[in-house]
Length: 338
Ligand SMILES: Nc1nc2c(c(=O)[nH]1)N[C@H]1C(S)=C(S)[C@@H](COP(=O)(O)O)O[C@H]1N2
Ligand SMILES: [Mo]
Image (tube, helix red, strand yellow):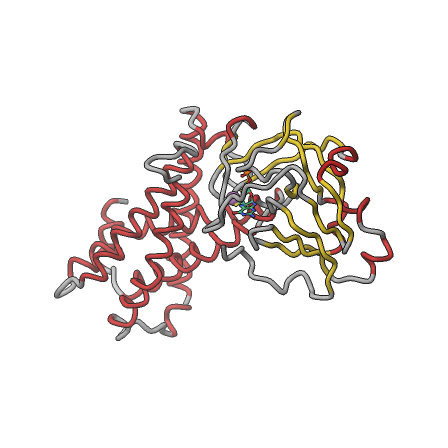
């Protein structure tokens, strides 16, 4: 076994680089796909896929080390790229096995995503510099290569299963994470979360929301509100099951108005906005209460969206308006830009 591994290490080279490129790009894309997934099955598929691709990077490391040792010189961008990928992987492992937490103002996922962002231009520079001889060859798709690829995939799968099993045996937080990978927080400890650059405004209690052209006071919403149990699953690595109190959008938007529109646009007083399919009206609530009390300023007071089955960034806080629109729901950036 050891001899065979050593023999394959001697063959490290062009194919190692190609494989590493494939898993890195795959890891990047599957990370975004996992962020976009809000329900059980897509969340499980994307987060397990993302974990496997990340482990694929780790498993290729011995081969890439051989390639690197042979290089006549090491470029700064390449060394920086390696460092950033190590930070990215490290933060990913911390999130999975240690769990959500804030150290020096940052959560593991913030470090993980930040490092992935920095890696993109560094990888671009690295690829342009080392493009010569890195092309795909006919034999790469031959039987021998397919067998090697299958061996690699099996190795990654075994490593994943072993880590998952070890996490269970040791009772680590990894064993309790949900399909999206998030860790549980008690409702009372939910952090006031900003997607990127938004700011929490201070709104007065006599704030009014424009719903399809009608001005509704928060007091009226509060009177009509019903309890809603929902899971807020933030892409920064935590989730909370809590009881909100809110008014279902289908009770505020008449069916004939909904059927004439393509999407529901929910806009915050800050300008932060998300667009939903009209069919979602029955799954969206204008919430004015949380766990038997009012909302706090940081968590959206006096009115915010509750959108079960969608990741936290859809739960627009400090709502100014809910509008029906002819624009299709997919005509928006997949993630907020503020
Ligand atoms: N206007 C506005 N709404 C927002 C955000 C934001 O930055 N601005 N962050 C979103 C994100 S990423 C999450 S996870 C939830 C967090 O809700 P919380 O602050 O109650 O935890 O609000 C969402 N709604
Ligand atoms: Mo979030």
